[in-house]
Amino acid sequence: MMKGEFLNPKKISLSLQGLSLRQRIPLLICLLLCSVVAIFSLMSYISVRSLEMNAGKQRLINLASQASGMIEESLRDIVMDTEEAITEHTVLAYLKSGTAESKSATLHLLQQIGGDGSSVYAELMDNNFNILLSAGRAPDRRPRSLKPLPDTSLKNFTNKAGNIYQVNDSIYFPVIIPVMENKKAIGYIVRYRQVKITSKLIEQFSKLAGRGAALYVGNRDGSLWTDLVHPVSYQLPVGHFNKDKTYEYVQKNNNKLIGAVRYIPDAPWVVVLEFPHQAFLQASTQFFNWLIVVGLILIGGGIIAAWLMSRNLTRPLNTLTAAAAAIAGGHYASTVDVSGSGEVGKLGRSFNAMSAKLKAAQDVMKQQILEAKQMNEQLRNLSAHMENVREEERLHIAREMHDELGQLLTGFKMEVYLLKRKLAGDEDPAIAEKIHSLENAAGEAIQFVRRLSSELRLGPLEDLGLIAALEWYCGEFTKRFNIPVAFSSSVANLQISGLIKTGLFRIYQESLTNVARHAAATSVEVSFDIINDKLSLTIRDNGKGFNASSSEKRKTLGLLGMNERAIMIGGSLKIRSAKGQGTVVEITAPLINDAVTA
Image 1: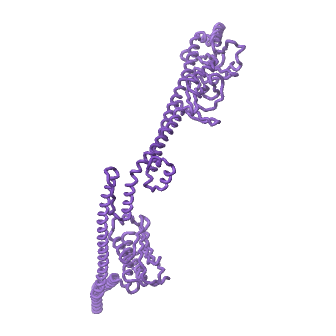
Image 2: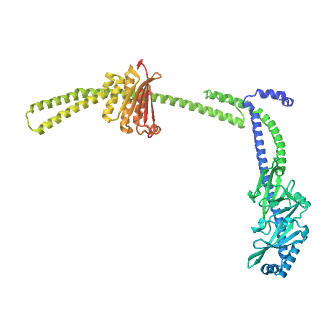
């Protein structure tokens, strides 16, 4: 292919339409390359985004800690300054004695700390937080709401400072210093200060923190929020957030924000620092754009390289494909003529070796299958022959028992009867009882020989037919084992071959024998029908059942014999059973002659 021909888009499109599945290897490689690049880019972007987000959150936590540290340090300086300005013995003297001199000295002290710097007011309270004295830098200009200030944080004193308050557009907070005697607070000096932080300082902090940063300071109970310049509207319940982690929420205008919370020690205040969510993802967004550009370049180069390589692979792969199709069609002797020492050449030689081994294995398998079929057929013939021999032996034994043993027992019974008549006048009761016992034993022996002879030679089956023989054996089974058997049949008359008739009856006998030996059943149901032009004999008991699958694996001789009999008559045997649910034996056999249904 010439260079200009390769770059012609129309010819490339026509060639792609005519490619077979294996000729589209370049397309597969390109798709794989696109997938790899896309997955790699996505994973890289997610990793970089996660790292950037984690780093931003950690920086947010650190900045919040720095802001809370600055406020904590400022509060500590105010507390220390207040403690240094207080003359404790003067306040103690007033609290203990209440003299005019101590009161004047205490008022002078309150005026000094109440009108110093940002302080606007000071007061002295007893240990129940009742105001005793108050003073300020300019009482006439002091807001009324600060005298007295209804500060619930003072009544639950646990900090050095109270809640932040708003008066007009100004922000105030109290500093609380306990007056101690014998390690017990007997009063409190409360110094109210105005927050005086310029907006320029806040702007400098925002620049230091980053673009879009917002700093809020408020009471922990959410009663007031400020930006340290003036009160602001803020409703986020930060008290529910973990102070060691960041939080995220979406504003009403769908702006997603990330923030961090820090509590101020020795004060009921909380510091919140927030950033827009997008401020954390600037670097990862730029990285993702760069990944897109690089990925497009890699995919374009991979498409060109894959197309060039496919030209050298298509021809030998087509040969291998044709040979593989021949093997799939059963021609295991198929080989390929692939030269070269590369991967394709090695694949061709391996393919030829595989074809030769498959051909040899096929020959061996065919021979083994043929031998197995012959052996199976011989075993089946042998089994059928053994069954025929067994039936003939049973018939011979039955005849011998009936003819020889039956005659001997009959003669024996007649002799006992004659002996009884001769000794009729003998009055010895022992002899009479003995003769009566011999007479009964001879009768029972004759009945046993007749019954056994009938079972061995299948007399009812030959004389009455299959259906009557099945029903007769139900009665005999009930008499012998005291297990009721209910027999039902929709077939009134039936003419089938002797082999099928004998096989069905013998399987039926073996099934009932298994019920008596193993099932511990209290009732048995037997049904004989014609279903789908096949004879169907079903024996169902309510016994303890067994695991049919495990019995098949153990291959018990009784079940094997029943299955072999079913196969010999051209039928099948199915056994369904489970522990505690009884057993169902289903025998089907071909219907050779016509049957008349009821």
